[in-house]
Length: 254
Image 1 (tube, rainbow, N blue to C red):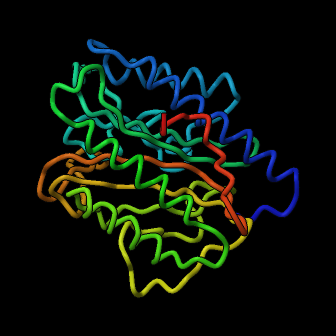
Image 2: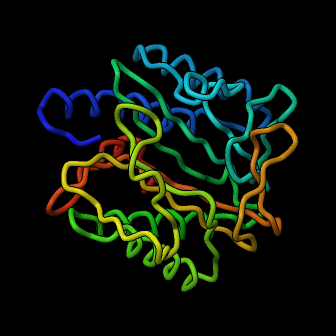
């Protein structure tokens, strides 16, 4: 969507506050021995407190309120009573929701407890690359150039990017134009970021894979060559200068 007045900006800020606070609190709440279903239920209760509705549930009938992916799962992991979190797990939580007709999206990967499996370097790279990408976005910048920046930074750190997972427009629905904000230089994409537009920018930084494939459950995605992936995502408003980071409250850069 494009922000045209203060009411729309306020609406996006409130929806973004709901998803950002939920993500932050779920990350703090996660602990070894907990199931991903318990963590999802906790997130659902926070969203409900804001009066917000789960976007993946509302839009796609997703079997959960938030997406929780663990270790080799890249994204869209289904919360489960059978999946028990362990010390050192690489966890990704993606929270998106609708509130009063406005939609916002954010996510982040983190290591649970001690970094016994040595995932923190991957997580840090994903965070830093997202920060650099977002602070290079303003009206008129080519979407493909941001993709090139993300891929270049990933390579510098010894990682790859997932080419079939992308950022996207957001605001009046979960996925809007621009429909694909890729993590690589898509030379066929000549579109540019537009001032006042709302977009979800996300990194998909991987150790060995370049594509994500869907498992038989119809939702969970893993790498085509295995390995691990870290994702971080903010919803922002594009301006002529520094973007407005609507989901900053999630503290994924801390």
